[in-house]
Image (spheres, rainbow, N blue to C red):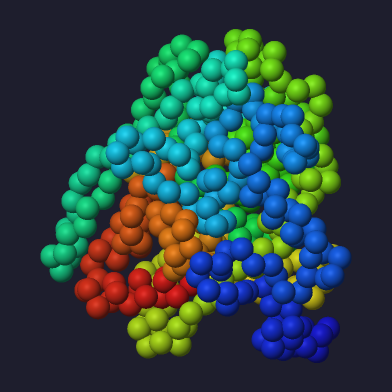
Length: 433
């Protein structure tokens, strides 16, 4: 067994079963893992097409398999928010419209499975668009309050906090009891590798798990996807996004997102799933088989010094460098391999400054799942957004670090005490990922 493990490691080093890509920055988030078989490659391409295509109301002779938009929706396609498979952009600076983001909604209490209780009029999220004859729900906008923080060596950093507001609400006021959360679109590469990390490997970390409802298991299971780890599997995460963001139903989410008071929406809804299981599987496999950008300049002296700072400050406690994969039947050469995502996939209390006031299963308002850091240095290089944290408030990595509170407060304070040369080294390391 030991020899087999050594052989696998050697093969990975030689690139025989790599999960990374050295593609140019403009395409670094869109490449397949290079060990795909001849049979898997057309599935990857089919899923890529579905991820990028705009959905239609119907009818269409050119794209009869892409009919099913709405009745309520946020954008026409997945790629509209996950630009080049990367981050969404911050709110429009002129009018504050959150084009690449969603506003999650809930009220006090929980649903039948222990998750957030959806708003009785607007549902689980505000969708600004509607098909002809169905009023869109309204617009979410975000303006920013800015404060200035002084670092120990005198450098000053401006931090901004979004103020979420709503306008043109078509179905009445939200109500003061409504809990809201502004969420930016996160990157989608590398998710198949995170899906293959065994539960026991995740639970060995130092954070808290979020146990959420699994449709396929018909039970509460470990959550690992979503900004609060509120989805248990990649397939459910994708099917939920189709339903909530584009209004495209599937066998997992067969019901339109219309609420009881939205009569025109309910009248316009389809009676059968818009997305076939074959299509859902293709999109899931496309995301599952996306490669991760390879590191750059990892041996540069400044990067090496920054990596030491990363560990000294305590960042690696939550941003675990290494996780080991379990079995990958579709990609057997990667089974048991080590990956380096810099996440523990667990929840951590990030302090009141980042709290959204909205619980999500076992995640409290201050809790967020540790985001992976791989590909971090390429954010914004391919046309995607170069914004950080769950609501895109941070314009730089320095801002993102300084927003860390709660469990991460000691690390953020230690960062604040660094001299510029030390801070620059840490940032060089992060930008090498």
